[in-house]
Length: 399
Image (cartoon, rainbow, N blue to C red; front, side, top):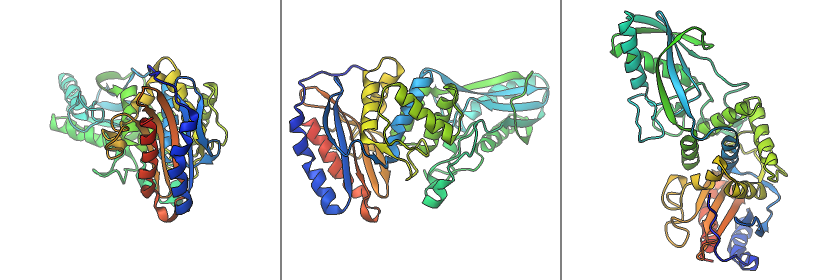
């Protein structure tokens, strides 16, 4: 990305701006941490407990995106195809969790590839071949290890993430809510396809998951939004399932085991390869949903600054974050003042944790990178600290 280079900020002007955060933390019985970097030079302009490891919540997704953009082609799409050999059908996908059940929507990231379109195209080919009934298998789970972190059961947050899978409609959600996911989203895709084919006169019986067969011909293919678009959507909506999926896709592309351990180790490897500090880094998942995750503010800020200063796909990471007051999880944050439509940040929210990692431009056009947070907030009251953290970012924007 192009890094704006307005008037450099005097580090001495930032420390007083942090005082309200520090005082609120002392009065509220929680701990505050923060770091501010100059995006153009990497100079540390301010830090408090920046080298200490904290629970990152969903700001950890910036590290997942860092790894994904470092190992995957951002312009690639994920294809989903129906293969056939006579009356035997097989549904295969490159890992698209944002399939739609209806027609493909070229203007939307979720649902860019629609199962109804796949069925229509395939039914025409089957009809031409004289096939009116068929059996349907689908790709087996493509990754290693458990598909959802078992530690989340004890943390009572497992309903906020779906399983990684070969494919899914709407990230595998069981309904319209962001809470509750199907245990077998790939089977649900196959069932949706079978129903759509039946509407076109092809009766389909489901068999089960299977390896992608050799020698089958491709009847029809649909394509997802680009990798870059899906990652931006993940960052904007803070989709836990998509974060875990892309972490594994990135790990596999980088030659690592596509499991929880392999994917989190790949994040560390990618960060260290880019020169980002990883002191204290301990990730149990790639979404930040686990309260056992630990990341320093320095790691978060350095990753974003490294991305901003890089060439190629990684440079798009900071501008893929949601804008204050405009979209994503930042829609209701910083609705007025100098940070509005200026700051871009990944939010992090757990019961006792609130965090932000992103970029903001000063009044003179200097770009700053920040990572700030509230940790250990009593009575699961972290949401109450958001205005305090937002106020600090607004004060940076006013410099």
